[in-house]
Image 1 (spheres, rainbow, N blue to C red):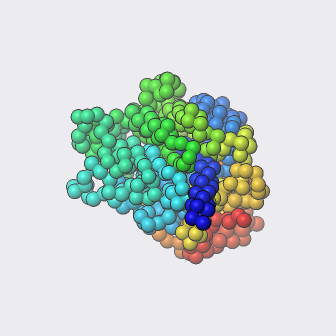
Image 2 (tube, helix red, strand yellow):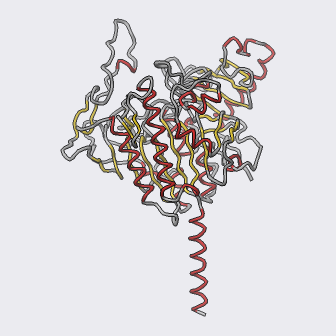
Image 3 (tube, rainbow, N blue to C red):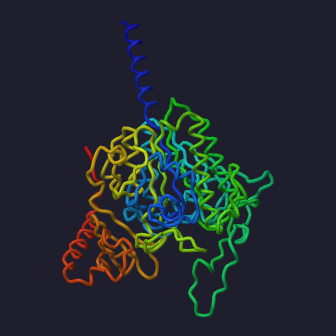
Length: 500
């Protein structure tokens, strides 16, 4: 009897291991400040001549599904990154606006569910690369020990991390591998990295009576004495490739790769993976787009070389809309607005999903989705249940990816601007209808007022001349949508759609 029992136990263990190995790997690549117009695929869809060709992403898109109505969870960095980790809109957070500095707390409860914790519970090895941007629970600037992180990716479910706490745009200007500072060179020390050393042009002088803005700010701060922003992208992607090379088909992995490109400062490398980068396009903005494209190509090439590509769901998207037009680059195409805006250009972003043999190649979808839908999607792949009292706004996209459902992924989409002294804007999407809502400040819901109503089916560019609030016929719709938005916010009700 003992022999039979042991055999049965072994068979159960083997079956469990086989089931775990059958789970696909998941690679999520999130670009920084990439708009639809930055990728040649989306420019071509819009009938616009691409300013920069992105051949690696074009090849990837040809093998899978691209979305034309995909949205970042917010129109600015940190709020979107919070949502991508938790599956919740950032208004559910105690600080839903702005940029979270490295000295601030991470604002995600360490015991709170994250996508990495979900994947890990499902048998995945989890790894994070790149810009964290979610705070780090450091001490004050005067007391902080920047040789090691107190809280970062490893505190939220990742088994491995190669992180830039604030990306390349702010201090600490340093890499941290599994919490420990990684020196650029053996003689590196932690020192002040000047504004220019960080890769920025000299701050603009502030004229008399003028209000200080980002272009007048000094971005100097503590970091690696040998910090070189030109090398950050190559170092980051090299670590990601090395990680992939260490993986095997026996254990699935979830890799969240947050590129530094194309956030300012624009500091392209001379070359990457044998491809000339700096000086290859009409300007440094375009060079950074090209660097991002090569990074994606290197990750795909590593997956294929290791024999893992066929069993990998790969997703590419952006944390918010693109940058303002510079030297002929129009990241928003025909859309109004840019990064930080409540207009479509602030949050309508590229979204690509590839899974060879599972997702039909070459499909362009107009399904309305949100970047944080990746959380519920990964939970489904990991065979982990979703607690809707914790993960409230993320919808499983597998039925969309696999062509198994025509039902809308969301009844409502909710957007927010970057906030600021002018007062924030919110928006509610219901089908093709978009209500833009103005608030007096970042905390008040009582002051909300309809600002604009658009039918995006007829007015995707949000032409203000076609603001339907000017037409009394649509006043009732606007008031109903405003009430829906307020009810969702006040009640805290989940917005996700659960699919059976």
